[in-house]
Length: 384
Image 1: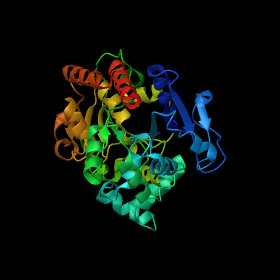
Image 2 (image 1 turned 60 degrees about the horizontal axis):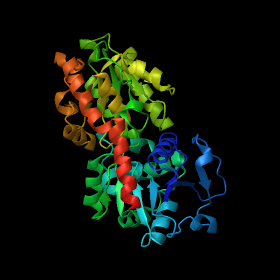
Image 3 (image 1 turned 180 degrees about the horizontal axis):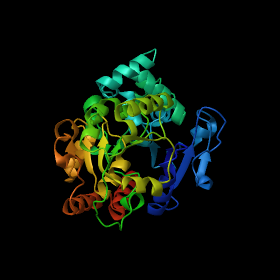
């Protein structure tokens, strides 16, 4: 049997239940746990599959029976997962599915570089502690219920896992470099292409607007991207800058809403309300260009969708996603080098041939059959 330590997550958990039950039927236990007896489930739809036991109780510990469990899969590192790894890791194979926040929130070498100069200056002016790590702890605790004040515990647990899966190989390379871990990396995807994109949509170039960022999180670095767009009205006054702000930090959302309006005027379109995927996709179809000014792996599902739609994607070259896309053979552009409003091609979508080439690369990596094969391989590896 495989024991999954899961979270009440809006995005990942239902997919995990569906796909592991398909690939390894009757071989999975899904355990939800926290430090209280309150287990009201907010996001998971497949509730009938869930077991619940408060962290640290005999009931919780009873699930870690090495005579019955082949491996434990950690879906995002938490305090209770880390403590279980420390306690049982010598006898049971623990596999860590890194979701991103757990890696970047644990290693100061990573989270200290997430904000660019203008964003960092405004962040410090708006937070009395003035430290990004404190902001990350508050944000993660607010959005997941996880208390991140245990970095050494997390590092010890991460170093003790026998294998792991990162969203991109480049994140694993960072982890290995920082930790010296001997863990085996086994690829895994939390979704597949057919769920993410309108798969039968023909390439076309009707868009003309700009998408900026993916959320109201500071790591979008909107304030450092605005200067690149401040003269947009001189070149294309008809272009709008759509800026998703529907989730993240409320104080930051207000800052960006005000600053965006000040710099871009009526060309700035803040998207403050959450939209269903089909409505969000219709807005993306209006855009020819996307600017993702992150320094870390973030918004990858979004990036896959906008690449499929044929947008000209601008990234920071230091972002591991840039190296990931380059490795896949996907066309993207360097924000600091290639974004220049004086050059007509800067705001042009990709050609149909370029879109088709990008789509082929995405299918080779994210296609349903490929993703299912990866998960089948992971299950075989863990149950061997």
